Length: 468
Image (tube, rainbow, N blue to C red):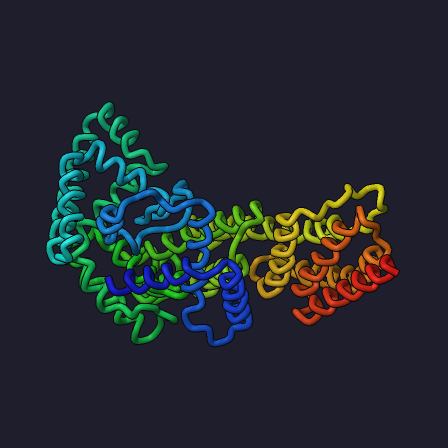
């Protein structure tokens, strides 16, 4: 589990960064990704930054240290979403709390109490081997209990309904099954985890062959663990969509029908499900206006859609083809809506207002300014992906429109600040400050800095005139 431990250390480091430091880091990493600079590991850091910010905004799952240790084998199969999307072999991180509550309350309450007491005692005395043994024993019992309960549920509909209600997640049957397989497959999958690189930058050539052999080796005699072996590999990949290359390799062809005939055909289903999840995440980020590293997420979506289209020959009228076409249409509609709305949002914030429309000593809403700033940056990022995502020249046209508006409209804002009275000065100052932030995104940091300096000179001159 060296990879998981390294990721956890990275996550802890990012948690301890100040918010401003995180924003600077996100900006630099996104620029490197969008410009195709050599930014090895940038995708991993951005992914963890998104998770850390989301945890701090929404709260982390309220599970104990013993629970975190118990769920360790599940780490490669965890995904950050609301738990209501179908993704084979994966569990939403938000499902950990209800799963742990079910285990303690209904599945094995007595064993869970003993685990907590004995595990805490072993940890306090520094006896790590004993702590590991206690946890592994409990994991085995939980896996056996899940299997027993679901065997009973298969012949008793009343028991089945009660069992699913007790589990309490949005996908109770799938989540419990994945937990069981992760616990049961802990030792079977360990050699695969140990042999894989910490980060797979490009799954190709010798590394592709090696991964295919490893997957087939660890899952031999454990067919139910085959998709989990694939997901272990996927969890290490900088470009998860490249998992389909295992299917292409197994089929000896990029024809979707040939790939589907092999056991590795499930790689396409896994990648498509992951793309569905990312599109939902992008939609939520854009609607809430609180997204982090949205441009990096958009790049991942773009690369996944392009990889599926270019490396696989998928008939349009096939199940995979219809799914991919539907996703591309969703992405295009979502992006067009956000891009089209951005100029109006900028104009609404920076519109020159007569003094009687301004509430005394008011300022622009900081949240709305931040959301609009993020949208401007997002429009700029969309220019890189317009062709693949079927939005053509719209991002560039909108970006140019914003540049023209800001380029010609800032003088009016400075004039308004220059002639402001005591009551409306704070509002007009906040408009200039917002314009400086927007100009930084549109023209670069020098432009925003120049506007801020001009506003400072204007304010100083006005104060001197009043004093005189």
